[in-house]
Image (cartoon, rainbow, N blue to C red; front, side, top):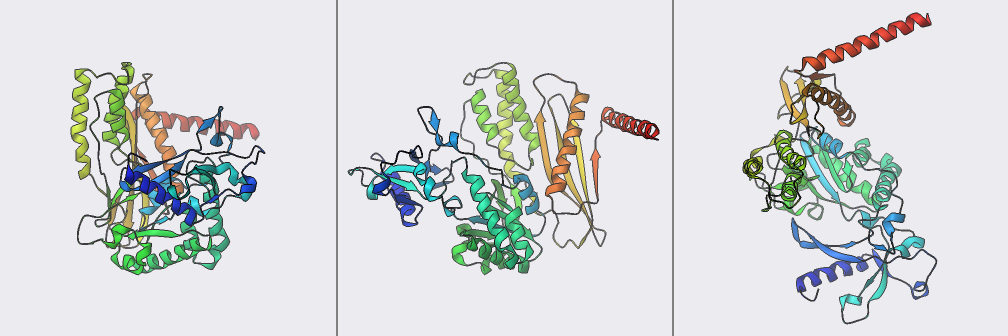
Length: 463
């Protein structure tokens, strides 16, 4: 703080805001000497997000240990109440009008019981005056980094929807229960009118539980204009729907609002050509929908090959591997040109009469993969196919045959199809699985014959 005045000013401002909003308080004098085994002091530090260099966040380190003990080690995690990230993204693509919102300081809206607050103590200088003696404060709300916080705060949000949901349209409570991942809300509707009503309902319902749903953005200018300025995201306030310049992050995925497409923003710094550097670059390609799975698979296979060679993490790779790596890096920037439509349905698509899922799976000695498509037919007979999900995996280090890999891909495809059927808001008529492996097809037919034979024998025996 003494070396960086901006860092100090931002830090002091953040802490003062905690006290002003009641998220932290001074420990009463009568409790300072409490010694009942329920007192813990947390170290804290400030960090800047690489995409938000002007906004500091003070993090309280619940994993810091003293005499071999940390607060997180003693906290119960609680049930996982968060929605499936892939499921939220899949549902976000179902209708033409997209909406995205954010719960302001979600964890800070959920209070910690008074009897537990001394476990969240910390030291701080009054008014940020580093020349004075630090005093003892404590958090009154749940904090980022605590093992129990995600489950507790998700429970509070879901309880709000259950308690007050009957006062609103069914889709309002359903949105909070099914289309929020941590503090991000992603939902799509059929029309501007429904979107406007939904935004108003979600904001009102969240308010009843003390949550403020803000930073709204949408693909529709009509919807955006209906939202109060203070509740819009800053980018949306300046959004020009005639200009292809607005990019939002939808659960980490780059979303080009103006064109309503998903894409990639690759900002890789120079990394050494070592196993550690390669891992850093490959891991930086965030792609939960698997849009670039075939390409990322090649990068992973290069990394796996280095592991097979037992190359040290910071050792320069050999010339052959370096050529492969440089070739892959040169293509990495081309991901900027890869785009897919956010919405499964194209513009002016009539009422859907038939919905099918088609899955293709295959394998090679490098790895295996599968890809899912949604095939829609409207009432006029118009057919449209949309990319849904892609997955790829490198071949295991222990060598197995390609037919076995193809069978693994087929089995994996069936498991993923169950996830899609469970998460997607469409009535699926049929699911088709495609493979060009005769070995897989014969194996499946053989297993079906065995099952039929066993059933037949069993029936005869019972009879």
